[in-house]
Image (cartoon, rainbow, N blue to C red; front, side):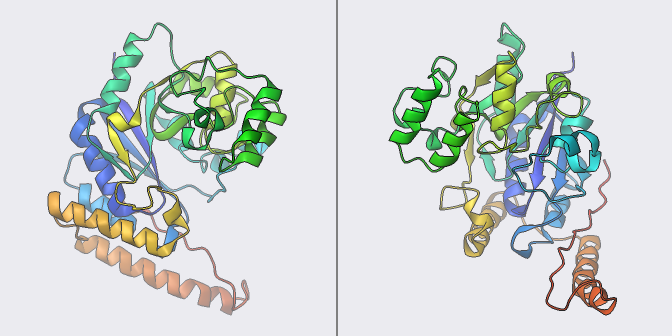
Length: 348
């Protein structure tokens, strides 16, 4: 039986951190990986439009099989339109990780962040645990956003024991009211809407996990009726509603401590990989740290002549596009269109 997996990550900026993520992943887990789905978001943070070329050029001669994809839409993480998701393939595959979960020919897809530094073979460890499991799991990896959950703050629940802690709706609300957690109000709304256990912050985390593709497709839109993993669906974060609904349908997940194999956001001194998306200085500082790491341990990151040409052409297009649209009367002079980065060709 072919135990290789496909890897899926969303490229929303952070090119130098993406290089570190993929290089360290392959350093420890290459033997388990077939190809990498790299979904290039239609918008990029802080005008970092040239980043994808740095990634492509760095790995061009390293015998890694990429499958590049650019979604039609740039969606809010809290996707909640079930009917459009079911019927509109381009919309659905604009949801984070969805293209790979529909396209892969592997039993498991490993979804992961693009700001990681691996120091162990997490994919291998997860595959071994799947092999040893007495039941087929819907997913395996880091479970729970315990840093945001009052059950963790009250020390009544852990990622390994979330199945045992089953409060009543009233008890769950009282617990959330007792602690000033980051998303307290939203968590309580989710509980009142009927999603009590697993608790609103609990999920199979997308930092690094394996998702069972056949079970996913059977139950998730468009064939099933559960919202896609990479959407919010009026929960508190992406993956929370999918994890809750799959669990309550009878499927199970297993926790594997992320910290045993990987560091998240190692180059961001805030300790969070999300703050940099809204903080320009934070973003570029983390990228500079990642570049320094690459140049110290992995070598120079330089654009090839062909990529330099593509970068120049794309920069020119982005400057000319608003002027052309203004001349045609499509947009007003004060408007700022959202440019799309051209996906570079990469032979598999």
